[in-house]
Image (cartoon, rainbow, N blue to C red; front, side, top):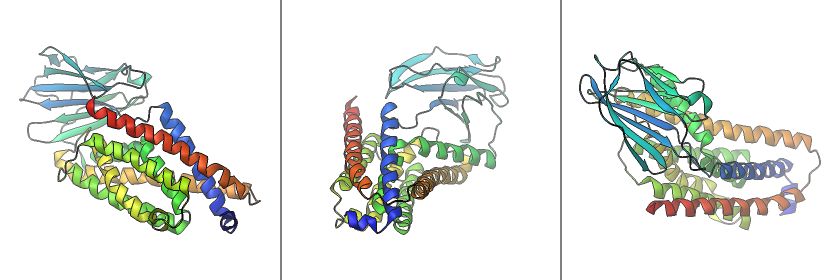
Length: 346
């Protein structure tokens, strides 16, 4: 095997870098409890010309504390019911009703304390006619003025940014891609493998987002973690005659279908605006692909840099790094799998 790697200096350092990326991702994700991108969520649903119901969901962090953020509406918005509080699926949920003369168009929504946290807030307003308006708030943009019927480019921008952020903060997805890159090895095989993953998850993302297919998300998330366990095992065994090593596109496309349902679950957090469904869905999908390409490009650029820095071919480097990295990834992702399976009954 060492002689095989000596024939391709770039492959050695490229794969060694991928091992480093895999370890970095697992350390980072472990520090954040392998939690996928979970923003706070504010939904205002119109019930009559002037009345709305409010749903305010704040995720509970790994330390058991929820983000210290609160909703502030315009002064002329009146609360007309008591606040009902519950804790469901790792989030604190509050519900109440409000009223404003003439409706909420032109009113302001402010998230108090958002400038002091790293939490994003997804805002969704649903009207009686089925149209929706969405916005993404963060530490640098804590307020939002309800404009009425959303504009095409406003919808596209919101969902595009959300897609990029979701994939870059979805470390389980990135770790899966890193393992695929390692197994693929060469530029041509990497391109084919990632293309298969992209096409596959785009199909299920679209079908799930449009509700043609409905599957329970917790089992999907568990299988996504298990898919990384599978790839880690393949890397540890290093048997080049298996289907995974010979045709990595078969594995990337198969598991890509499952990852697409995971992306769709994130999209369901804010839903799709009824008047701009194609724009929102396309923008989110493009955002996911942009984030994925940024990750792959970063790995390739650093691989090239390392190849230039280390001019001598140190063939034993990969041998020392590959197996420990694979076992490390396998242990961490197996923990994620067990954690997500046990969550079925919590």
